[in-house]
Length: 118
Image 1: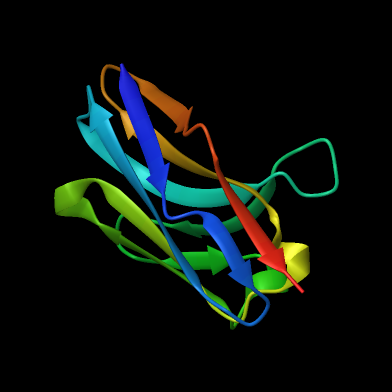
Image 2: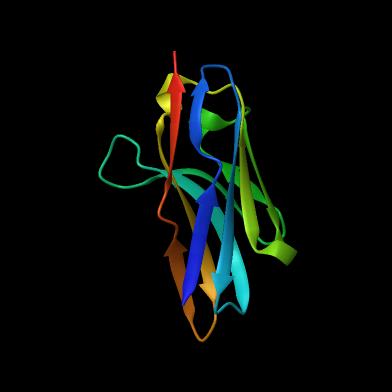
C-alpha cells in the first residue's frame, strides 16, 4: 500500500505564494511521473503540473510562468511552488504519482485546500 500526504495548503491573498509538498511512502520500487491536479470546473480533475523522474516538467497554460514543480527522489517528495496566486486558483489540489511495485498504479493524495482571497 502507498500513501501520498500533501501539506502546505491554506489561505493566501491574491498575489501571494504557497508551497505545496507531497510525500509518498509505503510499498514503492520506483516512482515515475508525479504531478499536481486540481478539481477545476469540469467533471475531471484538471492537470496543473507534472514532472518526470528526470525532472522534465509540464504545466497547464493557466499556471505557466507562475507555478514551478520540483521533486526530491531521495525523499519521494514532489513540490509545487505557487506564485502570483489568483482567486481563480482557489481549489482543492491533489498530488498524484505513478508508483511501480509489483505492477504500476496511479495513486492520489486526499487533497489540500488552497484558497486565494481578493
